[in-house]
Image (cartoon, rainbow, N blue to C red; front, top):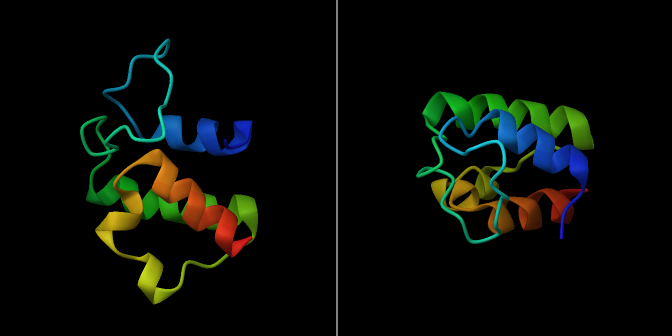
Length: 78
């Protein structure tokens, strides 16, 4: 599905997700604790880690709705 780097970066921004719980592709990132400041930080880390730039159309809340959508966006930019 996605690589360890993505999961590690994403997990850092999900404070409500227990450490032993897996990140499912359809899990709501907002329900797991991702907030607006977290989105900005996550975006920055993902851009640096994958050497990509999120274009305007990818900066919608829908992109950060769940892990699957976010990974599809990142992998599509890479």
